[in-house]
Amino acid sequence: MKTHQLVSIITINYKQANVTNELLASLQKLEWTNVEIIVVDNAYDPLLEKESINQYSNVKIIRSRKNLGFAGGNNLGIRLAMGDYILLLNNDTVVKPDIIGHMVELLEKNPQIGAVSPLIKYFDNPSLIQYAGFTPMNKVSQRIKAIAHKQMDIGQYNRPARTHFAHGCAMMVPRTTIGEVGLMKEDYFLYYEEHDWSQRIKDAGYDIYIQPKSQVLHKESVSTGKGSTLKTFFLNRNRIKFMQRHNKGNDKLLSYLYLSFISIPSNLLRYTLSGRLNHLRAYVSAIYCALTCNTSRQWNF
Image (cartoon, rainbow, N blue to C red; front, side, top):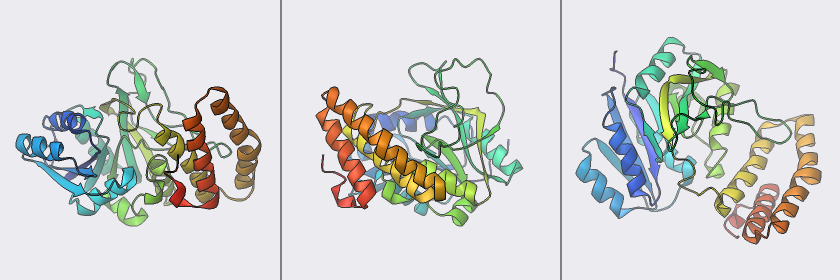
């Protein structure tokens, strides 16, 4: 297999040196040798720098004194990357050695593809699929579902296929596509930024694909935690932000009606009855921020 194209692998560390180093260890076994590995260290982690530089000579650490979030951190890495292809990987992933070649080959054969994600499986149970593509975005609720979520992998998804959205946990984008579409929107900070990016890539006339021959194992929600108020805030704020940017006409009107009469009342009731008042405050803050565009309130919960 030809490996002459330079692939820039970008991952973000946020106070998780041990987790990030597990990914870096798996990247040392890549079959594709022409790579540069960039770790964007959000908010600066001295432990990461000490351990990674000593262990891996092919890792470049970019320090950010400020937490730039997922979008901002990846954009910082992309701006400094030299590769023909950009591979974004969550730091809580472990990759198979042949992950790069299959995706590059697919992109080389079909310039109409603007982004490709691998098959994503669970780290704790590699026989279970987490992602084999995404369904279309529901125009009213702004929700999507991962195809084959928690299905056993019996080879039912073994061929490249068009899908609606790439997965931010692992996605490869040609530099030419980024040059045309632009970088991620940093005001999302966390969640929905990859959906927005995928939508803009599609709007530019490109296809989104999944390449099941490439696989990663994902530890899922290590960074934010499965039940964190951070997740509650950004998922809900950014779901509305995505709608505001991409819905038009009646679709936008229906979204606001759904939000006003179904989504907001049901979520307020759910958080109140369950006694999760910290999540209630995060949710209220998210709605307020999204509807008023007051980003200064985003951490007030």
